[in-house]
Image 1 (cartoon, rainbow, N blue to C red):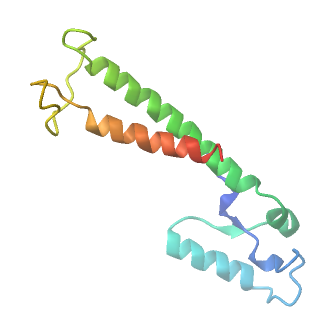
Image 2: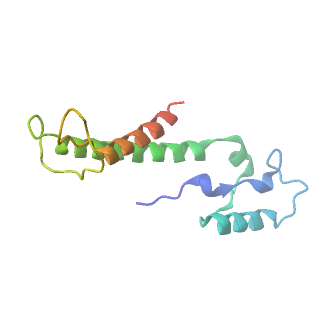
Image 3: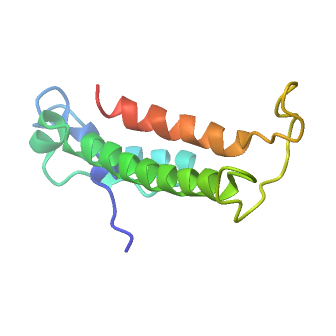
Length: 131
């Protein structure tokens, strides 16, 4: 189920404290339309400018969604590495493509470089959410 993230709401009309004082009434709609055009995403004006400026709920929600995705991808990556392990001491259920030489002292060793790279990206996303 795709649920829209509140990050697409903007509080540009709110000015310094959310009142919108001295701001042209059409500014928020034009601003949202231009940002939407530039990004290809659907931005719109926040209903409550005070809330949009005072809280960080939307970025925190987006970060949590990214962390959830990273944890899921990390599980898949770890499963692929485990299924590829072997031939003598692992499962050996699948054989990942050899994209580069694995070892100078262990002929035939294949490092799962794509899976390792993806695991590092996932770790970075997960770690970012812990700060």
